[in-house]
Image 1 (spheres, one colour):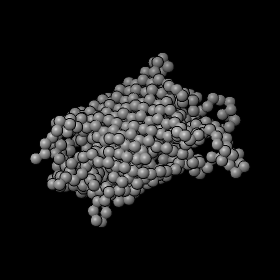
Image 2 (image 1 turned 135 degrees about the vertical axis):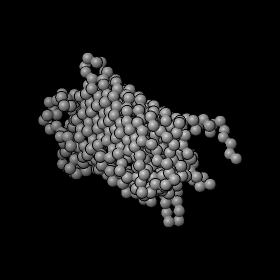
Image 3 (image 1 turned 45 degrees about the vertical axis):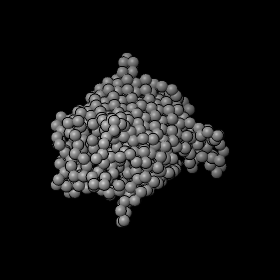
Image 4 (image 1 turned 180 degrees about the vertical axis):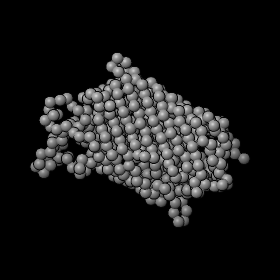
Length: 444
């Protein structure tokens, strides 16, 4: 018989996860000349010379951005539905200081946020949010490289929110350099259905109203380079969510332990993050940067539908995208830990994940996921940005003909293009930098 120590009991009550990462990145661009020069920052005009030809790049407004992003995530022998996963999204950002809109739209998943205040409110504002994740096909969980199709479910959610916020501009004075806080109430609905693979013994969760109280903090003091990568400074923040489900009954079964639905009815989840960027020690070049990041959190009574999902994003250093962690070599949302520990990007991670026990049931345990990889980001044709990345994760399980094996490849390729127009050189000489100039009436 297995006995439970006090520390095990505590860990089952408060599910803790955190990770840290370090990365050194270099900017590769067809516009880089052989002569060392200061790295241009995002939105700034700059001049360079390539093979005797002078190139002028005008200022670019970072307050009004409309962009499309397409790519593919490749995980050979990974989860069946994510071995080759194309993705695409439409991004909108409008910032008039007292009125801001940020939206990411991809059809199945959409996330939008609108903040509105006034000059007389001294930074206080009303906050409106919307988030939906509506997927018409089943989603299973992956354990040791094996698809657990008996627990496959179709599940979707939709939330809208209303609350109050506060924003204060910070150094270094860019349009996204600010401290931003918000407290919102987010009423929503979760609904579930069987798929063609769901076991008849698996109990489907009950559709339910879910209300969430959400506190959010974002603090950004970063300089970003012309590729919108972190260049110098820091960013930090976090989220605290308290959720309640109105109609939550017994669900699950098959190979996972039966959940405690009375505890899951009310859950608590909190996460924090910090990112810092600067020069590489003993390297004089301004183009090579050392980026460190740390993510962490704590949760109580989390289940499959409220647990943290890793990784949270494939790329990006936009001020809000930074709050979601990256985990190289792992399929999007493949892991659903209630805790995870130090992750050093180059990389080393210790993550809670599902494993088979000797009796055939599935238990959650801590495992290491060391990985190594690299990538390149560059300016492409037709004003596009291209990013390619390869990672080999030594700790992730992947399926083979002879059974699960340890170790898996991860590749993603992304192409992004901004749809907003840039100012001409003549315009930029008459006005302040577009990235810091507040336009009027950009939100109708």
